[in-house]
Length: 148
Image (cartoon, rainbow, N blue to C red; front, side, top):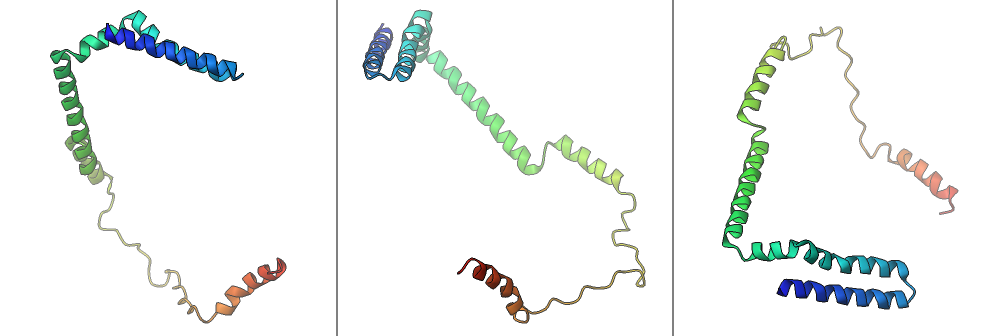
């Protein structure tokens, strides 16, 4: 009974605010406020508010919510552990078996190029200070172009 009265009062206040908003020539906002303010009355008329009030004061319903929370926590914990380990035990075993079968020649990990066919080593990098003037010449050109 109290929940229905509170919902009706909230709807009446919302409709009053909608009327004031419409008076200020903000019709779109007034229509939106009116729609929101009619929701509590609709919930009372459909019986949702009564069901929620009965559920809120039922110890059995609260125990059910606790059980659902524990179940959710168990699901979340087990999923986090699976992610940390890299999947379920069966998935890890299947991946290990697939990895063993995919290796064609496990001993051939290095490329088999003879010294004559290997590409030449790259020259050593030049020190930074050697070409520092060249690196800034194009930057100076851009700055001069823009008058800086």
